[in-house]
Length: 86
Image (cartoon, rainbow, N blue to C red; front, side):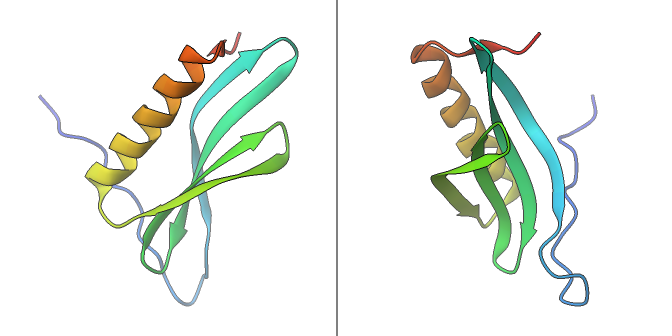
C-alpha cells in the first residue's frame, strides 16, 4: 500500500508557490477551499471562500501536520453545514 503523497518543499529561488486545493466544500452557491502552498517553515494552509481569503491560515511544519490540520478544518466545516462540492 503506498504511503501519503510527498509534498513539494519550499525553494527560496521560487518563493512561496501554490501547490493544490486540498478539498473544496460548498454551501448554497459559495465554495470553501482549503488551499496548500509552500512556505519557508514548511507548508501553508489557508481557507478561501471563493477567491477571497478568510482569516484562517496555519503553517504546518510536517506533512503529517498538513493532513491533520486540513482534516480538522474540513470536519469543522462539515459540522457547520458545508458539503462536498458538486
